[in-house]
Image (cartoon, rainbow over all chains, first blue to last red; front, side, top):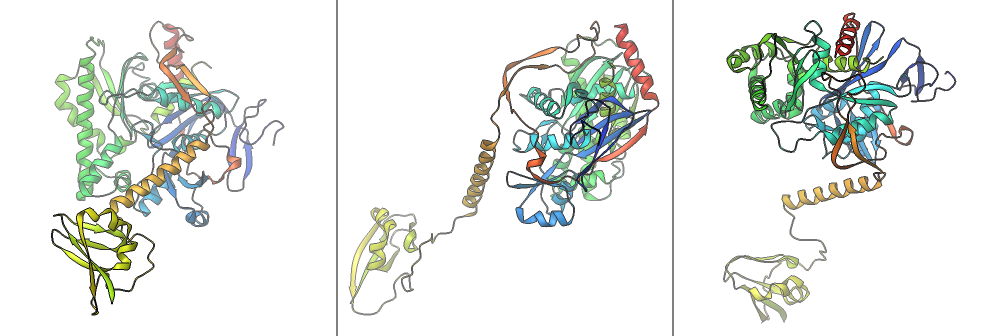
Amino acid sequence: MPIGARRNKPCPTKVLFEVIDSNAGDIVTKEVNADPGVGLDCGTMNFVAARRIGQKIETKRVRDAFLDLEQSHKRMLKLSDTSFIEISGKLLVIGDDALECANLLNREARRPMSCGILNSSEIFAQQVIGLMMKQVLGSPTKIGEKCCYSVPSPAIDVSFSDVTYHRAILSKILQELGYDPEPANEAQAIIFSDCQKENFSGIGISYGSGMTNVCLSYNAMSALEFSLAKGGDWIDTGSGSAVNVTRAKMCALKESGIDISAPEGRDQEAIALFVESLINYSIRGIIERFHSVKKEILIPKPIPIIISGGTSLAGGFLDKFKERFESFAPDFPVKISEIRSALDPMTAVATGLLMLSQMDD
Amino acid sequence: MSGFKKLTNLISGDVVVEDIGVRLRGVGDSCIISSESADSSKDLIMNSRFLKIKNIRTDTKISFWPFVNDSNITHDVVKNDHGIITIKEEIQKISESLQILLERPSPEVVVDKIKKPISLQAGHSSQSHFLESIVEKPMFIPSKITIDEENIEMNMKVDVSKEVVDKTNFEDGLTALRNLRKKK
């Protein structure tokens, strides 16, 4: 181990990308050509970090969920090598394992974030988020490495939607991890990632789990940013209630690869209905928001709509969006050149944030 | 001779004497209990205004409530219904959560301004887009949020999905974004 490098602390003299082998408990460090700067998408369902290594972009994802278990389960967790922590006398299973355990026990996994922001009713939310961030970010490559993290816009369809505290907590956590945090709008990050040929002009829509974020950007300038408080969780909860299935199971079904244009069975039909309802709701919300700002949005050229977010990964989502958009097109205040999906809907936000983090280098 | 008491309900509603397990349904419903049971019942005293209590003396053996030998029951004879059990569980959870919160470091950081999200706006220089944002009222942030991993037991084999994408146009996009900002 190089002199000066300690566990979980960056080496101040050399750029290192520290990899921790958690099974052996040792620290394995290797020197890689990692450029400073990292993008972090703090989603309700997943944390995704993007880091540039040479000509490649490395992304890491961890499920944003945990489950509390009794102490009696500790032996079972150790035997099955399931990820857990013991904190304040509680056993918490973290990440994807939490959803699997929840489905097994017919329970709902607990979420540190809700509707796009910190879940204030979860007592372990901040600590769990800190752990997850550390897993996807690793140690900074240099002291005070810049980390651009996503923040949603306040929701326009709920009262008292404020993201200030959420932003401050995430910033504090990142500072404790050794980063220099910079918040950035989630939906605009999609424009940076996927609209280079349009000179960073377009409407980015991030269909997340907790909410749907929208940004109208022209020549990299944000003209309008807002969010709607419905997303993948709303689909899971609503469709689950309709067919008397837990939200966790509906989420698993949705992510298993359904095609909403040809649903099979009652459960998939319920999901398809709610997806279509979400699409209608989001398009109507965009139109109403554009009209409500009461200023003319003069875009000289048609711009694209970029669809992103984990919820948009459902089969047939883009086609359904195009189909529904046609019926709203006469009322849409901006001329649209095309509607397309982000190149990688799961990592578009993180990649765009990575770009922002390296702008000043 | 044995001593007994006859309890007669005087009101239209049920009268329950919990500690001796008696329920009298409606006006006129009655039962006979032993004098020993009656004398040892505190709930009978509380409910006495709803009951007519009459001493009975008899030489014959008669069945009287509770039709069993006196027991040494010390716990509640009335079961809590599901709602009570749920409320007690919730109270327990809240107490545990409160205990956890009290053990955490007290907030020391008072935030009165935080950075606004980066939003490239026309006319701003490269430095001025890091604008301060004044919050309406101070926020109390915990002094320490992240966990000291040395002090807890953990097995963090979190399934971190790793992908490496060949993004040769990333550099082009980054250059274009930098150039665009310089023009502003």
